[in-house]
Length: 302
Image 1 (cartoon, rainbow, N blue to C red):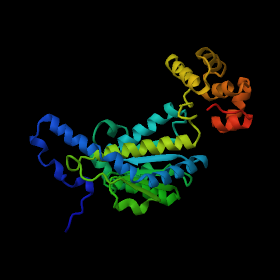
Image 2 (image 1 turned 45 degrees about the horizontal axis):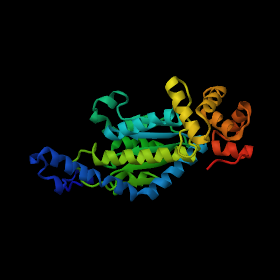
Image 3 (image 1 turned 90 degrees about the vertical axis):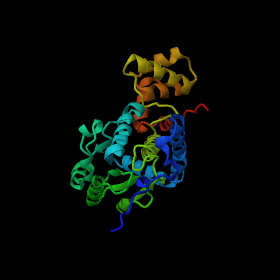
Image 4 (image 1 turned 30 degrees about the horizontal axis):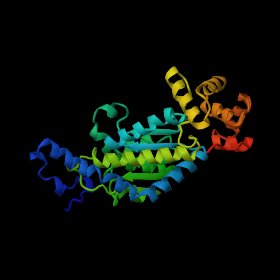
């Protein structure tokens, strides 16, 4: 029987002698391979764009985004999901990561969990028809991810698959497949390397673009951050100064009047309306600063 190996499991002809090279040359070979990852991600940006549009449609429709992964893929997914609330001020339940083996597997390898399709199916039990299930599997064939995608199909949820295998066996189970062609790893089968880097780049781009499209930034500024402590107050004042062009003192005062709400303070600074009106318009605009400004009829600074 012929064994069909994923691209990441093949031997890299450029690194056959890596174990006998001087340290600097080992690093040069790793770095040279790493340099190919961004180009590989660039090649699949049309698929990433389709995925982003699905994510935006999901959130605007009241659904949630769920990541499913095992090993490196699951850890990258967990990190991405965990960083969205503090960065963009969104609810922590908006984007949820499910890792094969649960929390214990985040810090310790529990490799058997990835082979359990029923576990993936069970972890996807909370999916609803309005949700988006994102499966992450370097090889594109991980049973845990297959089980989650099967459950998503059962309930009518949208599906996305992110792999390092353009010919991923699970691609047929996904509405959109982002198959990044990272090729053979420096160390055969070590998907924590190029495949993992590619998945982080894809997820960072996906989730950031979704948040931008949802209005959780103003220009390239993180206006979803709320000033809940002294460190964050300083950061938010800087954001407000950059966005409004007003003094740090004026921005600090506006932030205090807004109760630490960055968006409300910014709308008040940019329009001159009082805090109560600014807060009402931000709510009416669904939290989008530009829409709140449009509602008030204010001209935006360049």
